Structure formats: C-alpha cells, structure tokens
Length: 590
Image 1 (cartoon, helix red, strand yellow):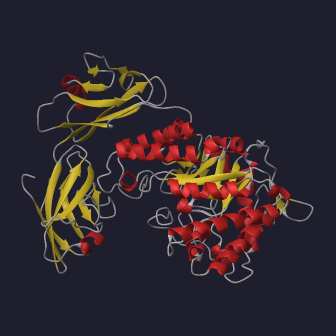
Image 2 (image 1 turned 90 degrees about the horizontal axis):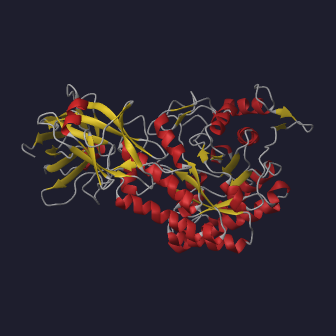
C-alpha cells in the first residue's frame, strides 16, 4: 500500500537528478569499478545466471522461495536514495543470497524519469541503472521480479478519467521495458503493476480497467520477442488484496490468456487491527490467526489447486518493525505472526517475499546486517519448520505484593515440549514449574522469587521454552507495579501525560466522551491507533498525545482516556481542550 511503506521521515535528498543521471551513465559505461563488462556492441552486460528454470511455472515459482524485496530504493521518489537507503550494490545481493533467499523483487517507480507526454520516453541512463541492478541480482543466481511500482498511484490511478492517455503511457512503459530486457535469462520475471487501485470509480469499472491493463501487459511483452516469448509474467489483483472476488477476477484474466507461464500475485499484511495496533488488536488472537488462515486457503483454492502458482509479492506488518518509533506491536505477538505465516504459506504452496523498506526495519543496507537478528531467525525458521510459542512472552510479577505462581499456555504447533531453561540450567518439572495437560505451564512462587532477584523494575530474567524442533520461545520475567499517571497542562499542539511506567508496557488507549461516542482521530473504534493517536516515551516517563489527537478533541468537553498495559493494568485519565489549552487529570482508583 502506498501510504505505509514510506518511512515517517527521510534523510536529506541525495544528488540532484542531472548529477544522478550522469553518475548512472558512468556506471553503465564501466567507469565505476563494477563487475559489468563491455559487450561487442558497447553495452554493459553481466555474467549470465546459472539457475536452471523449470519448464513448469509452478515449479519455477517454488524454486523462488524464499523471496525478498529491495524496498524503498528504485521505487523511492524522486531518487534511489530519497527514502533513506543507500544505492543498491552487487554486494547487497551477495548478502541476500548468502542469507538463504532464492529470489528478489525489485520494485521500480519510473515516473520521475519518464516524459509525461507521448511517446513517454524513459531516460536511457535510468533504464541502464535499473538494468545494472537487475543484472547484479541475476549474476548472484537469484530470480528477479521487476515491476511498475508507485506509478500505480502516481498516474495509473487516473485511468478512469483519462483512459486513453493512461493506457498509452502504460503500454509505452512496458514496450520500453520489454525491449531493454528481452535478452535477459528466464530467471527475470515481469510484474504488470503494483497494487493498482483506481480509487475514483465503481468496483465493476475497476475490474474492467485492471483486466485491460493485465491483458495489454501480456500482449506487449509476448510480442516483443527474444526471451520474452516464454518469460514468466506476473499479474496482480486490485490493490494486491487477496479477497475472494478480486482473486476470482484475476483467475478469469489469467485463464483467458491461455498461457502456462503466468503467475498470480497478491500481498498480505495481516489482520488490520493487529497490523497497526488499532481497535484493540494488541495480541495475535483468533481473529488475526483466522484472517491469515482464510487468506492462504483462498490463494490455494483459487489458484494453486487449479495449476496457477502464487507469489506473495509482499508480506509483513504495517506498523512493525519500526526502529525509529516505539514498538506498536508487542514483540512476541509479532513473532507468532511470522511463524504462522511461514507455515500457512508452505501448506498452501505459496512463495513469499518479505517487504523490506531497509534502514528502519529488517536489513540495514549500510552494514548489510539484520537490525534484529533474532527476528530474522524466526522468519528464516518459518521457511522450513514450525516453532512452539506460548500465550505471551512475558510473566509479570508485582513488586508491591507477595510473589505467587504465574502461568502461561504453551502453543506447541505440532512440536513436543522439551523443557524450560534459564541460561544453561534446565529447570525441574514439579519443583520449578508444573505442566498440566502438556500445555498449561505454571512457574512456582519459589522459582519466580529466585528469578526476580532484587526485584528491580523491568526484565529480571529470560527463560527459554524449548521444543522438539524450531526455535525456543523466550519468556521474560518482569517485575512491575501498576503505572501511575499525573495531572498535566499543555496546548493543542503539545500535550504529554507524566507517567511512571514502573516496569510495565503500554498496549493501547481507549478514548470516549460521556455520551458514549468515540474520541480521537479514529471515529469507528474507541481503541485509537498506536503511534498515530498516542505513543509512549519510556525514557522520559510520559505518554504523548499526538497533535492529530489533540486537534480532534471537542472543545470544552472532557474525553476519558483508558490506558491498557500488557500486565493487565488499566488506568483512566480525563483530558479537556479549551481553545488552545489542554488540561489532564488522573482518575484516582481507576
């Protein structure tokens, strides 16, 4: 989706367009020290891929598993480095291959380098830069998916009002791409368009327009000759959404082409309330799990079971990870999602491509190291096996009261529980913990007393629940007391609530008025969006109400905020905006 993959803040703009084009031209001419070699006709070519592509599209797409997205790079606007990532290098693809990926999706936005009038010529230097990046990936024996990316909302979205103009530009774009890449190996795959939407028209018209684009894309590529005559081609549903009606429309389009080298592509970012933490979606609960299971069952039944391979072109969570902001999705709950997705994809026979925006999420492109290696370990493990989890990854022990036994429910996910470890020490069942019905795990008061030690607020110890396969599930033992909120004053531009977290973590915030209506920027649920309506500032001991929230409050009318914490604590707070002044009062005994 166009509005969730751009980082919330960017680095300063890189070199201007003209210097950037000159630099790209120098690279293409072999003056940059790259691995490109001069061909007899003077063009720059890379060593050919040695990957043998199976004849059957289903087998080829299976060979692409797992896949990774070079996000926020060639798709960035207006330039490759505009959204916080360095320029792509061949070393990057070596890293990706070494980490176990077998394919990469290279999103490309063409609009900043394309004339807006006929014949809609794409700058030669930019086309060469894209080709260089593609060739680097191919030379590392990776399958490559190349597409038309943010153009979908920049100008393709205007198709309902400017049908002929948009179609002509789309056709010209694919004519030029097809010509430039016609002699590339079959490990290069074309994707017609990323997440097409056509917002200002009816559902029926959207179906018609997308079918027209996908059909035109297919005809242009096939007629361009060379390696494009049997190249694998990928077509998307509207917005990349895996809903049944949209996948049915895509199935109809693909079958009408009578071409065995076609692939269906959709995207999946989890059940929306969980993905961004809104509407009470603080846990990877039954609603979120069922949403994922249903989505993959639809992919399997609509396409895979009928001989059409599916490439999940993007997956992840819309609001996590984001190392520039407080974590809106609880870590253990996010790990459950990635573990579950890998399993569901394997059952459905779907190849998955992790959406990686770079700098602030998964792979740091500067260091070529995973920002969170443990997270990547869970993603990687899910490609081949299941891992056991538990109902939560924390046990909260109140400092203000006597320590009592605390329990969790294990989710073996088809594995067998092998035991509980603290570092190198295996805990003893019956003494340190009890296990009821192979699932209900209870830590004894004696064990918790030992693990909490001097009972400082925060994580005192981390346990590992180990299973017969997959990764161990880590359980933090946390000392806490119920957080405390204090009265405050501020303005409609800036208001913070003094907060003693005392080892606890903020989960969500409800906001309502006395008449029962919802307060805050999101009016369809009282549970407001984490980081958008509010966010914790743990180092400075505050909860921040965003300017968007403050400006949405009714003047002179008190709103009741209920803050939910992962320990189970709930605290109420009254906030009133009067003109430019905002006052807040903690509700005692809440």
